[in-house]
Image (cartoon, rainbow, N blue to C red):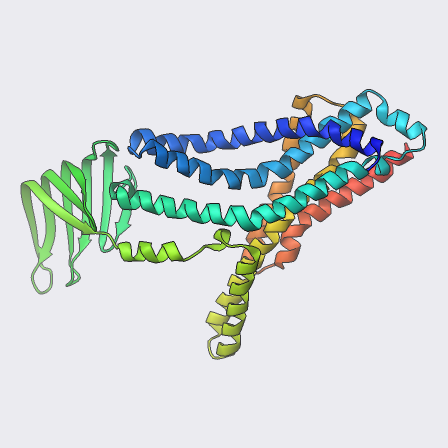
Length: 379
């Protein structure tokens, strides 16, 4: 790289770091409230909450690093244009396309590093985060019961209007149980408490009623009042242990996802036309897996697309401040995000190809950027 390229790239570095830090803090703040809820209300130990936070960071970095490139491009080229340095370079016969060479190399480096990151660090951190959250439910199963929400566990439907996360005291409780013979037993209680056990949730209820039907045709209705009643709800931890071994789509690298695609294709060959419904489901599942593969590369590649689009916009507007760059960036991020999420939804349903869905926002931004570059060079 020449001195010109070094100079332009250096103009990007500080805005890139600043944008990365600001965007990361914004996304962390959204996560902090959930973490404080675990620590303050649910009584989870601080070190465990800290682990949840650390395992959440790679996902945040995967988004904020490409986004920070756009802020850096808008600030760097806005400053160069505002101080007439772009005009001076053009007077020496240096085109804007040539000025962009250094930043494009910088963006390509971001693309390579983030692609590696998305295939190594990110899947593993997502997997460990999921396992840690499962551990939290194991060690504190009462966390599964949330106030104001119907919770379905085995053949029990549970509703608690009020719950103290630290003391596990509960108020206005309704527990509906489907009995082995098909009858429904409903238990109401004004208050009680939750007790954790190895493989069950124990409700110690006070001042309540038990409502259930009796008889061969359930023609009788019985109400039993009680001062204290103990209800045990079994928790299937065997299923939880099975989930520990299984990796979701976002917990696998591209090679692992592709292996799963190959396995599904073999299943389709095996079933052939004998089970059209299952074949249709597996084809949709293959499309979802391809979406995750393309996403691991398309989002990092957005760094290059942002540079090509951001540079001519900054030169035309001649705005160099962080607030202006962040404002423009926010609008472009929203535009990019709408296309990305919309495309992902359509590809998950196998309506459009995953390749088109995940790469269309980049192609669109690059196309607009090249058009603006061509227009700017005519000025």
